[in-house]
Length: 540
Image 1: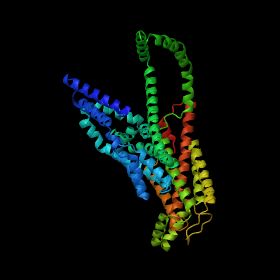
Image 2: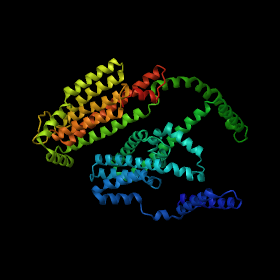
Image 3: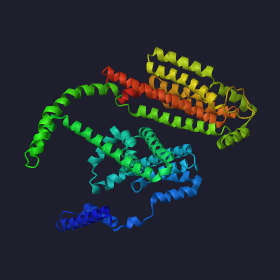
């Protein structure tokens, strides 16, 4: 037996004896007795060495993935979904399956870019399913059965209050902590957190988590065992760091109350009078009073002053949504660019769309398509930007004005630089004139200006009857412009997708920067920077 098995056997024996003794004395019953017996049995099974006879789970998954080949996409995607969608993460961490997918991609069997997208989408879908299961069943289940496990209505109210204040951060950071990742979406749904607030944090958290572990396996696929070990340690270290930070913040807030500080000092004095701790107290007491307390008194106000001016306050949902748009847009644009660079020819989806276009083609449709596509030209969208800039200047909205102008200029530059770098041929037999290369679609990229201006208008201009209708109309207009380019056979469908993704990523990035600058400026002026003030000015 190994040292760990010996320790487990002794611990199982101790727990079992303690449970029997306390049971006879009437001090252990119900769920505590069951938990004690489960712990004793689990440690006993581990000590028996039965787990050593089980097949290596990582080796089984790796062999299965190698046998599946392209089916690895489905295997990794299903496991990424089930981890939160079916609470499989409570039994088996999902990092290893995602790492194995990266390993298979590193061996050249599958595409790492496509794998990243599948993992990301499946993780978001799993979070969403768990969220809505919690919304549908979780609350009533907890209210009905919670009292058996000391989950009272007061504690449920505390959970609701916590997720209302810190739900987004819990979803984002908890994605990197095993047991939190598996249950946080369910609890968020049960707590009544709005899905619109939940989704952006889920998109960012799953994107970072999936990318980290997929690329970890991809770049170090020749040392899978070491990578798996490092991943486990990294998760443990991250969880420890988060718990340390949470503990430090909790301690700081408790000690801000003079009465709590007085109680703590009284406790230290009582401990210092104990014979065994008296020598340690003789060293710690003068160090605390002469070094730590004066240093804190001197530096705390200055550190708080610097922190308020360097941190962007409670950026909240607006910044998170902007970053989520950046992440998704950037992923699709980079993925399409890599795919087109490796093979300039049409993709399978391009071919299907072209076949549909040929089936729907008519002379009237072509004329309508030419009218629609004209709304995505540079003169039209550029004129729209200038009109919007004038209106924003009149209403004295400098941040929205800068976001609009900088984003429009950045899109124009990015489109032409990418066209020159990729130089992709256009589809055969175009039905409208076009210059330069096909990738990406400039019209599709410029069409995102309509959406951005609709979002700006819905947030800062009064008198709009339905803001949602305005934004949906702008999205429909952007889609019609992009679709007209494929209908007129001047762009492949992948060109259009890349154009939309590029425009969205640039507008999202400009918005995120504007939100941060706005909060830093407000902090510097002594104005409280709150999520509500960000929402009033944000262009997200």
